[in-house]
Length: 19
Image (cartoon, rainbow, N blue to C red; front, side, top):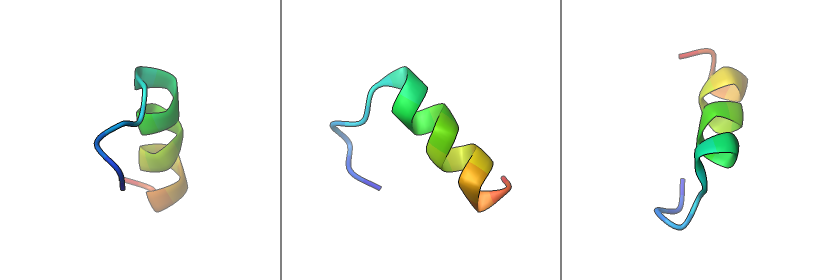
C-alpha cells in the first residue's frame, strides 16, 4: 500500500484486505 493513497483509496484498500 503506497503512502500516496488518499483517504478514499486507503479505506477501499482496507476494505479489500478485509481489515
